[in-house]
Image: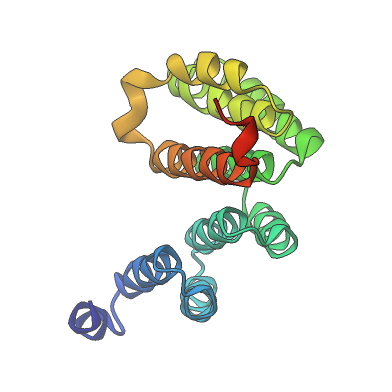
Length: 187
């Protein structure tokens, strides 16, 4: 990846390459490195007047922070991204990320904004809203409701990176809960 990043230096694709490198670092659990690289990408995007790109990179960092449990930093990243722009993709990612962090009111508010702004959008109705509602239900211990809500998203699973991340997070959350139960309470 370093060769591709070096080759992209000074070119329009440099920002995207940095964003991908930040995402790869976060996926590998290297959050500090991810933050540093993302901040370079955000600064470069901002300097080039690409506020939507800066917001997108910031949202990626917010999601990574949420997945790794840093709710405070994630919330800062999400709100900063929303300050940069409120495009459809930013609103979708923000609603999902905030819902993972148990920010029910703000997550629902963003769902309402998406519904108002894009009333005929099939993906919002069929994929993003059920995802956010599922995250909110999970935070209220409604596992059966989560399964029901996510069942409707099955046709779209390969198109949404958040759903893949959410499914992994859901699986690990269940595993952690299972491991925390005393052996005597397991069937």
